[in-house]
Length: 70
Image 1 (cartoon, rainbow, N blue to C red):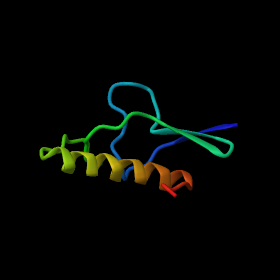
Image 2 (cartoon, rainbow, N blue to C red):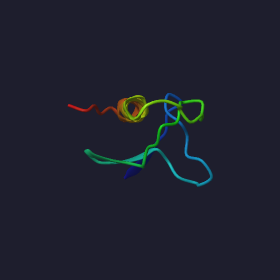
Image 3 (tube, rainbow, N blue to C red):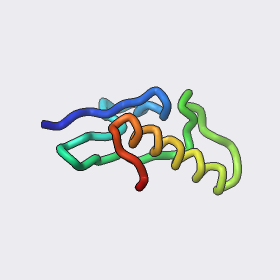
Image 4 (tube, rainbow, N blue to C red):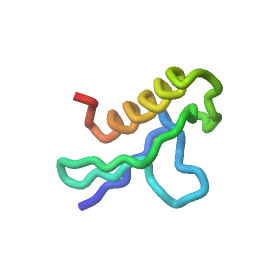
């Protein structure tokens, strides 16, 4: 059984009926991430700051699904 994963701690999907991730058994499939804040605003900054925001978003999605980077 597949479970849609969505968290308010990461930006929602804009303009499409998609989810942030799909949990299928012991696997998790995440969607593409860009440098949006959880409020949906593009982060203005260096490539390092933008990458950090993407990783924070992905960490939030993983946490919501019961996963981590480890």
